[in-house]
View (cartoon, helix red, strand yellow):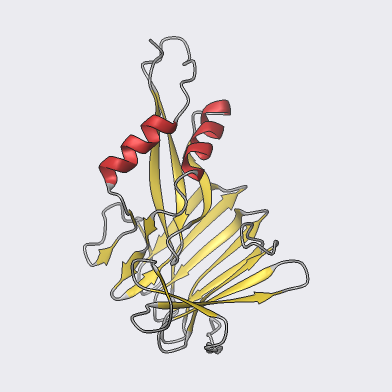
Length: 237
């Protein structure tokens, strides 16, 4: 039986955000409240909805909340476990599990040092199925606040020109960015690799975009999700 969320939020030391991840002075108009709990070596971030039910719990190894470490959990507003994932030194490691509202496993991903190694998907009855590739029209996906065209332009201007392999007409690295409910990128990994300095440069470029995002919405609820950023390396002229 999947664990359920029982903790409720205290209004003291709660930071409030609206659905666009803009920080608010009070809970009026808020879609999320975030409470930070210090630990011996780091901190744990608790995220609540407007009725005070915990929706996410994310551990960090540092006091600034930059390096995730340990098991992060998420819940549906009903309290049913929604997902579980493991972090090691800020990168996804091992299994990441997602569940349907009825508690049935929906998706099982395996990561190694932040890189996706496998994915299995299941229907609401627990039967194995092909993983969907089409976007769900009922969801409002995470987006760059300044727009897709400006995102592409900022990436293009920020990337350093690197020598390409012989015969190459251009290379593309795809970076998977985890966008939190606060509109910040909390974790990145290479989704499509070119290797070496290309991957490192792509991660550097994406790190400059951290605070300019609107989180994904499931109905009225902001949720943590991934956004894929293309980083292109054109030929040198």
